[in-house]
Image: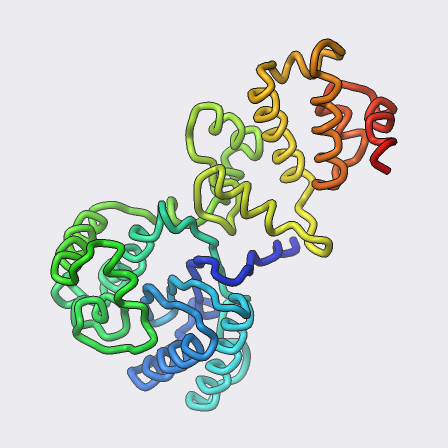
Length: 321
């Protein structure tokens, strides 16, 4: 199954997950760990990539970052393609080091920044590399030690992270530690893994029913956020050479129909009834234009969504062609 396009706009918050192939090690000792972090930091400074949280384990690395002007792909390509040959030379091995490509999840900052910082920084404790929060504080291969001022990395955006928790550093550190202790009691693995689980539990019909009930609908495994955030990211990601799958475009159309009907004071059922009373013809024409010209949906599918014939859609758009 082909991979979906990366959502790679500059200035986007990403949770990046890097894993070793066949669960193999990506670092074997402190020399490797130092090399990996030095490359990660040097490239971050050179590309204006902001690093907010990280945890380097034996066979996995997690990074929370905001991409620079060149986007995420350029940064990750340089990091992984530079580190893998170093590792192979040093350990006299051949072949791929990393599992496929890295995984990246676009994240809604307002809702998930603090949770992701805690989730990533608690990783070494959860998997047993350290035994307590006190030990985690001096574990040098995680951004937590940087926030606690136990190590210095001039490429990590320490002040930005602490400001999320409070204005003064002393207060911010206390608030951050209290939040970390609370998060340690909660398993966020599924919540913070993107939206794929929603599809696996019922596809787009499930997404729509969740929205009607007021629930958040994380509807794409590459995106972590509210229903509105997911739809905005998907819409912005669609370009002339990057067309969204039809199911996603139809979903956006159905959402647009609901909003347009709500604004016009009519129901979507009435819109699809075939009635030509009041503003319904004009409303259908506006929606048809958006469906065909902006979302690239066929006349036939647009007609089905509007409850009219394909020829009716064609007539609506004659003046636009």
